[in-house]
Amino acid sequence: MKRQRGEGKIGCIVSLLVFGTLAAAGYKAFPVYYSDSELVDACGFIASSSARKPVETVEREVRDKARELAIPEVLADRSTVRVVKSGSGEAGTCTITLRYKRTIDFYGAYQWTKETDKRISKPIFENIG
Image 1 (cartoon, one colour):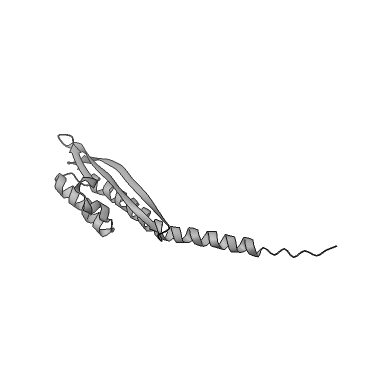
Image 2: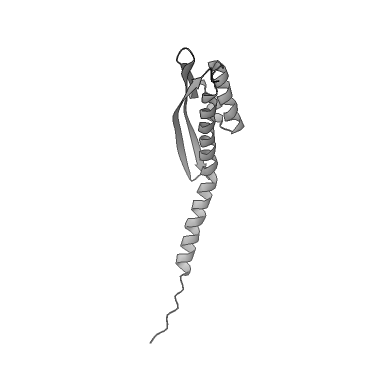
């Protein structure tokens, strides 16, 4: 009987290269996805607390949050954030629409464009007692 040594050096090296590549891609992509998610969550909070605020103030708060999260695409163009308040009397709706694209550069080898097209709509109530 011949003895076989179950060495898997090539498989181990390939696995390490794949894992390293995925880790490097995640290192570039995770901050972009995380900051976009944080902005959408913040817009939900801003929209629900916009009862007595004018539309311009709500839009400024969204842009301030984008500045805090380092999302320059929101700050570059005025059409990326749209705020609409509707309703009459004591109740209404605040709708914030985010529409922008961010490019993730994977070390010069590949570029991925992530599109954000979200519409956050929250009810607002003026007299909650």
